[in-house]
Image (tube, rainbow over all chains, first blue to last red; front, side, top):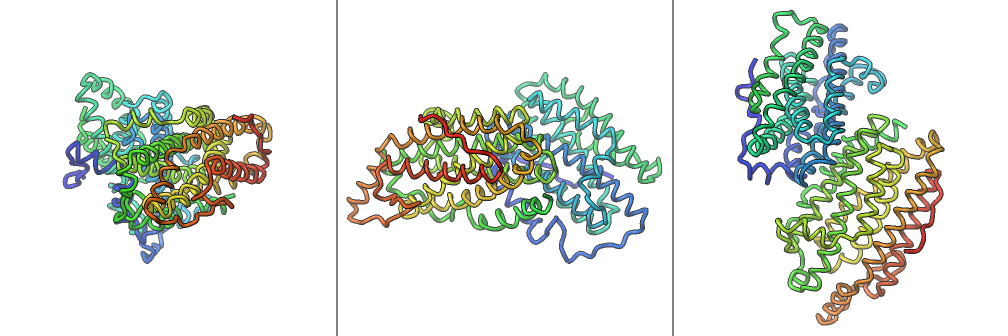
Length: 259
Length: 294
């Protein structure tokens, strides 16, 4: 599996700032795929009749995704207070509502699968490596460390979600796949912001790359362990488990953070 | 509780706000309407408009910092999701009022200097009191300060501004219509969610009432400063007289905004906001605390 052909982000600096850091741009972006799609899905799309093991696996997977989305929601909202300029604050505000929407559509899909009080249960089913990742991200945010926060949130976490959702879409039922397709479109915007912001920062402060490399090493271990645990729980053969991790590493590399 | 919070979901927000009353607008208004030349060509009117719009930007920046800062301390996921919609609403308000400053001729590289020059120090203090609670992760105090006090003030200020600009500046009045609709939702959430949390945490009431008192003092001082400068209002009325027309009477809470003097305007605004505070605070089990007279 590869991200070839998926245009994560390609914009010149001025065009990027002018276009993406506004409510207007956000609304024009999301309206195309959210109009008439309550909870991210065409209401006419049939509800698939899943076998119990398949249903249980999907519930476990969506629960893990919910934990990731809560991390992204807490992270992006926490960063607004110390974002370096108004444009970044406004972009992050659009990201906050995206992340909250992702959480909401996933909880809605869980309720469609028959999970009662989906909010109450997903934390308990969370992968410990993902919880550790969330803890580390929030440490950066609480320290008001913009460089580390934007890297952990908009490069690492978004790439992790991108890889997981893109892989899952290939085998998901049509309702779940459509929901994930909308989420992926948002993630691309978020990754583009991280890439652009950090790209500019690293031009000014090339020495920061050494620090980001250390953070990446630490977080990569948590991301790959999360993937490994999740794939094992889903019964994926050992030979196929590395695919999603590879896609994650490729995504991060495309954003300019190969090592 | 969950049934009430369903009304504040992202889906409901999407359908009612961006896909509802904001559809076919740009920066909150019909793209075809512009700032009137009457304002752009008159230095006194333009400067007065810049001064009042800066206060809106300052207030909205505080609201953006507060609503986003409260998400991490929210006690349930539904409240987090509502605050996410509020965060984007407030960011939009920052954007549209900043855009108005540009429309009034403020240059992009001068924006922060213009804001610093015009920001009312009492309004800055008002924001600091609120953000101190938010920074401490005090969700209950933060929501009372943000969704009852700040939003309650903003709601009435926007209503009054909208009434007084309906004839003279339809663009600004339209911009304010969307923000009023947003603020109504925010105030509703504050009332509904905090009542139950205060029942669970009765010991927090004195501290929250102190915060309300302090914020109210700075709010009233801001009003006092704002209405002390009569130049913009007098110039607008002079221009209307010169044009030979008679302004349509705009009555807001019993006061004719086209003929009232600044003291009457200040009085009706303060009375309206304080009346709203008393009602809304009582609904959540708090007693309004009157501050010293600024």
